[in-house]
Length: 136
Image 1 (cartoon, rainbow, N blue to C red):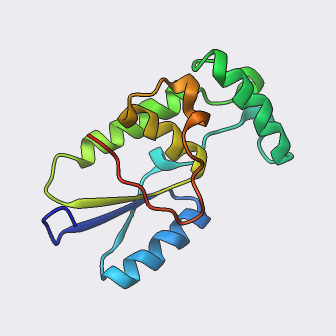
Image 2 (cartoon, one colour):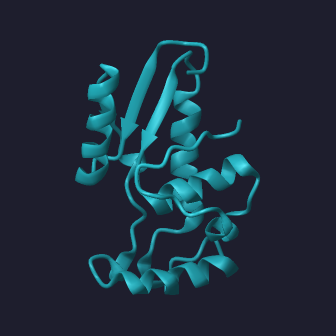
């Protein structure tokens, strides 16, 4: 992995992500570090509601990566916090595995693929437990 045997696993502190990270960590013999910057995107007044409302937010995202309609966290806010984490973690010689939530990872990936935040839904959907490499 990346020419090094040092592996770090950094995860969202939300239960589903943490549990997934712990499965990988047990197999690799490493510990898990939680970081709130990997938390799921906050969907404001839609949080805890029906999943079919996400599409309403994603439609608005296409026009404005800074929108906060329904009091959602903007795409650019998610992108900034996750990219800052990657830049911080990238200062070492370790291979880093990030375990988080689909929307957050897809938004973060736009920064490394040279894709505008408004187009985050144009990237391939993240499947459960899918691994992807980030391009520098």
